[in-house]
Length: 274
Ligand SMILES: [Zn+2]
Ligand SMILES: [Zn+2]
Image (cartoon, rainbow, N blue to C red):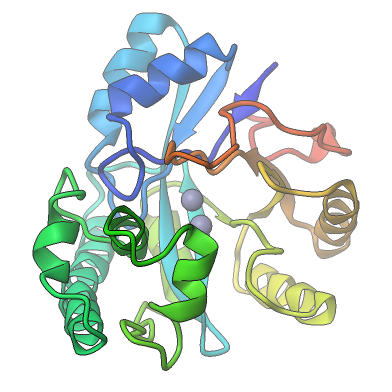
């Protein structure tokens, strides 16, 4: 079984439409697939229609930003009911903040000599949501930076031009939204937060204590050591294991849908009852 439970479309910061992402997943041999756009469920209906057409098991998902210990983390909601009002109200708060943040980022970039940032970035955001990825792609297109790495080194983080702190809901609140919508909550890409291993484990433990069901043990960029460690911690903390590529489809991202290293403990997987 090929399973990929973390993918983006142009409803957040991916390049392809939900239909195109689902087709690509099918071409790559996926049997089970989740669309998990940032803070929106707007692409799910389209993705489900295409997945049904192609006979692929579709899991409706969302990737929600959240605060843990004053840091921004990402929590996946898998198997959510997109119509649920609690979830929708929560996501609306985040969408409003994203709009406000985009305007502040554009002002910050203007102060650093990058003019017309909002208009140029808006042109890249096909469905209205403007993310940091869109700003980064704009800076690359304009020749201000050569790649994503240099963008985040010079702009969009901390006290740098265009840096705006996250104002997301607390992690326990986000877990509650996901549960209200009937989904399972899983911490996304635990090793991408610039934390020591000790802190990553503390975060996982804190999330587990607050009802978080699982953690992404295998991501598109995981090393074997990271996978072993996450899987061990998940078992210790009683968390289920998830896996997903975090496919976005921007040029120069080498991630491919469905291409993941093996999960060490598939019997503990988040999809075992699906
Ligand atoms: Zn993420
Ligand atoms: Zn993601």
